[in-house]
Image (tube, rainbow, N blue to C red):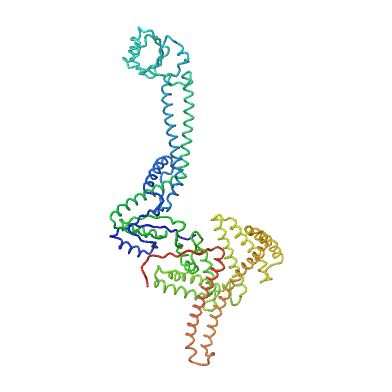
Length: 639
């Protein structure tokens, strides 16, 4: 949850600036060097050759040109860095079917658009003669006449009639299309066809072959048919366009990012070929945490000759684990790394352990003045330790532990082992230890249930639903059965009715756990043994809760030692301890300061160790999977 993303980064560095670049890279302290090679290409990172990448980029570009007409957002937000999958063919396979679908839809739209243009052109011609109510099948039966459909200018129409006056012809239908244009249907005797064609040529009469445009027996029928076809085609075009809109909304950004990646690859190949031709090149392979990406981009602005590509790690790569938490919880990474780093894709427990560890430590210290000493220690050491050192996180931890310890010390009514005059004591480990013991049990049960809930959500995220049910069922059982266990220690605090109800419900939950978690046990006769295993697990959970009583023990020890030191000092001031009248008052301040410093140090050590132990054994065991590898930062050697 707070594990930083790691990128496999490849630098191509000209030899003449290599030493300067590697020094600057080292001073940045942000990468782990995998290997350095001379005159080596990055082909091993790519599953496609240059020519194929070039072809695919062209294919994707054509798809983008199509989809951008239908992409409603019009702009694409790109991340500052381009990350490559080392198996780049897997990326194109994901997009390939989309590209082919887009191309087919666009091709269909173009084909239909051509059909629309053809139909509209036919309709334009036929509309000129709309209203000519004849059956064309009858015309073909006439053996003595030829029929013509003409279009000419209005001013020449009268001249045409004069020229044709010696030819037997009829004007069965004439229509003034516009002010200057006339269309007409006329008939001519077959023996006069040649003379008619001479007149048509002389006056530039346009002859229209209507019969070629018809598939029906009349112009009206043909127009109706063509309009129906046109309407259906328009609907189909709109349907295809809507599909392109949907594809654009779902995939345009993904396709566009892939296109930019391919352009970067092509540019990288070109740079690679150019600088390899000089035979003076070094290639650096390294792991780069996401949180240090800004450092690298800033460095590359100063080294414009250096080319870089970012790749996603391969499944079998030995990728380091780098924690990346917010400023408040970052110091607690020291606690996590003492135990071990989480595996890749696992849960980083840092944010979860931070509040628990702080409260546990403050209760163990149990003194407001000791909290002040921790803050003083932080102020003295914070500038003495390098920020790149892991111990800087430990020193920063003192700030939070000291501040919470002051607040806790006030509510525990303890200041150097003395009572405060505020009268706001909520807990008192010396005078009311049972109340504090109950509180530590409550803290323990809260943290353990919280750990089981983390495991539940982790399993749900990984789609391991049965494992999620396992975790949540144990959490419910612990809560349900807790009144029964609580009565064993504090019989007067729980009524018998609550115990009986708790017992009945807990038994049913326990039986569900036994049956449900026996699902993978084979052979079947071994399933009853799981009852005893789960009963032992139940004891283990409540034993973990009892383990939190160590907080009371450490608070008792810290308070008791502080009060004992104060008592000794009081005896020394009155010369009642050793009986040496003038020596004892001089020893008193030394004993007071030395004793409380000793108690402060031993309480801090005990509080740190036991609070950490509660995280590692009781809390982490519920969800944490360790095994991650720490990153080996390429940085200057500091002594």
